[in-house]
Image (cartoon, rainbow, N blue to C red):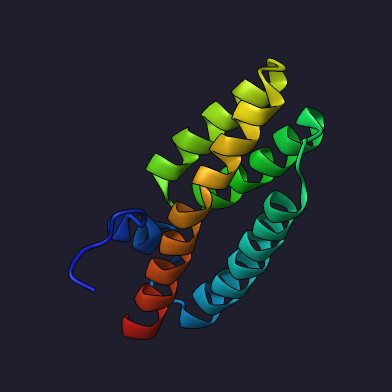
Amino acid sequence: MAGYTELDETTIRGLYGDDRALIGDLVQLFEQQVDEYAAWCNAVQQPDLPILADKAHKLKGSVAALGMLKLQETTRLLVQQAKANDSPADCLEQAKALLPRLRKALEELQFYHDNQ
């Protein structure tokens, strides 16, 4: 992987050092969270905005803990949009649009873990 688009290598190294076991655990937890979020996004047709806000808030915390600052800002905006009771259809569209970036972030985290 030439360069990271979601993962900030300096930040994650500063947070977790070279602790491969811990980073491996983080990969597994993040993968589970991304899978659950994706399943929810793909299952709903009309989202309950408080539930969407909660799911996005949890993602925001996870990506922040992983030093993914750009994704943290995107998830913050989604939380804000859902809490403002904006159009449920628009919020769901934004939630689904986040999925490729979450998958990319997971891929980058796994690559970082495997190659540190």
